[in-house]
Image (cartoon, rainbow, N blue to C red):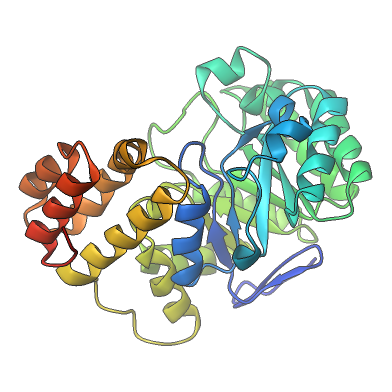
Length: 335
């Protein structure tokens, strides 16, 4: 699918997004609460957290409320992690039956425990297996199928050749989009993502929808990268943790409007309260407080008294203490 580098939309298979960005699947983070806030701030598409194919292929697991998408968040995607083509296909079918609108295949994850099991980024070492997984999944579902990759497994010509073998093959077979992170698997998150390589990939595969990933924490910088590289879209990952406002900023840029001012302290507090309210619908009170802490670390980055605020919020051990801390530091809320 050829798209203009200045396009304000993004097409992934039969899904038409009104903006060229979306929220990434983030293991341990992008549950319904995070996805809902992203949609409220302007994200046209979100993904659930990365799921193991073995779990996603289990009907009992998918029947649990925490795994199923809700009616107010479509379109929403699911990304799966695994190494067995048949299991990946079964998982993809189960997830679409559960209500997900598109399937992503993870050939990018650099976590050691994932690589040791031949999953995620390890599949860049096995082009034949990676291509077969795509083929099996594509045949098992009727929704768009995308693939997340990194630019290679490690250094060396063989690693680069494997990458190109995979992306060329799946592009020829009609993959709906390639989401590419501009680092190798072994780099993990060291050094900076290489966006020049993504521009070259788009030039080599002009008919394939190319979506970029890596170090996108600022809305204007993200928009500039999209224009400079000529790729079709970007996916916001770590930059959206504790900062759902990045989506309203991006939307404003692509709609030709001024970037909104950074949220006031009161607006920050209201967002944290809303996030806690949504998390409390998923988890029991004490677990909800603990679970929110990993988001609070990032929320506090916007507060002028970051360290004091963070210390107070992170030491809250129950709902009453957390709401009290939010009221104290953000001047909102109720105890």
